Structure formats: C-alpha cells, structure tokens
Amino acid sequence: QPLRVAIMGLGSYGTRVAEAMQTCKMAKLTGVISGTPSKIKDWQSKYNIPEKNCYNYENFDRIKDNPDIDAVYIITPNALHHPQTLRVAKAGKHVICEKPMAINAKEGKEMVDACKNAKVHLLIGYRMHFEPKTLEIVRMRKAGEMGKILFFEGLSGFKIGDPNQWRLNPKLSGGGAMMDIGIYSINGARYMIGEDPIWVTAQETKNNREKFKDGIDETIQFQLGFPSGAVASCLSTYSMNNLDSFFLNGDNGYAKLQPATGYGPIQGRTHKGELTQPHVTHQTLQMDEMAAIILQGKKPEVPVNGEEGVKDMQIIDAIFQAVKTGKKVDLKV
Ligand code: NAD
Image (tube, rainbow, N blue to C red; front, side, top):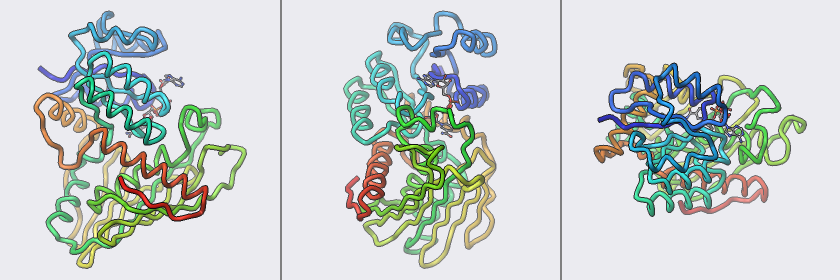
C-alpha cells in the first residue's frame, strides 16, 4: 500500500508535485484541498480523484474521518503553513509542508510540538536532501575526501515578476527573497558543511523600494560561522536570474554545484572530476523517499523533519535581526 497523499494548494508548485507523483512507486495522490472549485474539478478528472476526497479550506478538518488519506502535503503561501499544519495534525494525518516551514522559528516549533502530540510525522519539502549529486558531495565530505572543511559559498536568487503576487506581500510570505530562495543557501550551508552555525552577520541592499516594501527583503548578503571554524558567505536575492551556485572547500579539495538547487539537471564537479550521478525528477524521488520515512521508518541521509525546518527558521530570524541591528548575532540551533 503506497502513502496516500492529499495536496493542499493547487498552485504552480502543487501542480508540479502532482505531475511528479504520477511516476512514484511508494506515494499516490488520492485527495485535494483547494478554495477553487474549478481547479478541484480539473484535478479530479486528470488524476481520478473521487468526490469524497475533495475538500476546501473551511471543511478540511473532516479529513480525519477519511481512511483513504494518510498525509497532507501543504503547498500554500508561507504564512498559512503554520495554521494549516496545526489543523492537519489535529485531524491525525501526517504533514508534509513546503519550505519555509513557517515565517519564524516560534511558529515552526509550535508545528513540531503539534505533530509530536498528535503522533504524526512532520516533514519539510527539502527536495535537495535526496538529490544524487548533492548526496555524493555529502558522502565525500563525510569520508574526509575534501579534508577539513573551511568554506562554503551559497548564491541563491531569481528575478521576481508580478508585483502583486503573494510572495511580495509580507502578511502571506513573512519576508522576501530570504524566505523563498535564500533558505536554499542556509540549508545548503548546513548540509554541505555538516554543522549548524553559531553566529550570523548580514547586510541588506534594497534598490527598488516600490516593489520591495517594508518586510520584503530584496537582496541580503550574510555570513555564517560554524563550531569547527568553517565559515559560509551567502547571497539571497529577488533581483538576479539564474543565480544558483554552491561551492564547498576544505584544505584538500572542493565541490561545486551550478545549478545547485534548480529543478535540474543539477551539474557539478569536485577536485576529483565531474559528478556523473543521473538526473532524477526531484519531486518523484522526494515523495518516494518520504513515503519510506513515514511507512517504513527509513532514516534519510540528510534529515527532512520539522526540527530541521526549525533550524533554518532560527537562522532566518537571526539574519533579519543582524540586518536590523548591524551586529553579529550569536545563535544556538
Ligand atoms: P502559487 O501562488 O503558485 O500557489 C499557491 C496556492 O495557494 C495557489 O493555488 C493559491 O490559490 C493557494 N492559496 C490558498 N490560500 C491562499 C491565500 N490566502 N492567498 C493566496 N493563495 C492562496 O505558489 P507556489 O509557487 O506554488 O508556492 C507555494 C509554496 O510552495 C510556498 O511555500 C513556496 O515557498 C513553496 N515552493 C517550494 C518549491 C520547492 O522547490 N520546494 C518551489 C516552489 C514553491
């Protein structure tokens, strides 16, 4: 029996996940939650979803009485993740939640607690944690093939379009580029270096105050310090297209990914040569692996649980604080 999943939020990423799930071996799309009846109709006919597995944002608590749904994948605007996770947990269903898991660490912790109390899994949509070239670099780093790790550089950005979209509304997004795309460099710094940072410094640049209002960061450069002495230097932006690069260096060698986090194919090399692991559809692999975590207790190489999500939220909180104060912020994640 596969993991039977309902998708909440039938927007652009929800659509991508649904398509990718069609070739999953261990996960199956069996339900939808949406505020738009016409989208529900489309999805019902496209994916053969029965009427009894369709919900809206008012009535989805009733999912608790539905034996054909094991988990809900929340793919809505960032600020909705917290209240929706709490409701899904209360309904006794596992939660898969998109990144950023919430709009701050406090909300993230409440989500972790709610899922613990309800005895359901909380997994965050960190698709790179399953990506083969990424995992090869993690393997090499763990095996000591780059020597003592000293430096990571993460560059994450794209040029955002429509000024009226939810991503530019702080009430729905909780922030700008940092929440949306900068989080890849934060998360990447942690899994590439293999440690959690103990301090943060950050500087903001805002060239377009019309488009990027208060509470929406356009470009932030930030630095992270790690217990071993390794440092990371990163850039998050909504103003540069095709900015997607990771670089890791130790005293013996390097790894470079570019593109590092796009939908693929990911490309990269190390001091030992090209990375040749095959391209896989990230969301297909992610959903199969998440099904194995939930159904079989599989332990992923790089964790994707709620606690991992909270760490990234703590770092984002600290980055925003460092931007505001201009001071170095110590943190314990
Ligand atoms: P989107 O705007 O395309 O879709 C959002 C969906 O939420 C829409 O269908 C919209 O109707 C629905 N929605 C429900 N309540 C809403 C409300 N009150 N206001 C606005 N919309 C509402 O956005 P998206 O690109 O699909 O992003 C959704 C989530 O997925 C975000 O958290 C984003 O960070 C995440 N995401 C993750 C990845 C990834 O690679 N892991 C990629 C893209 C997006």
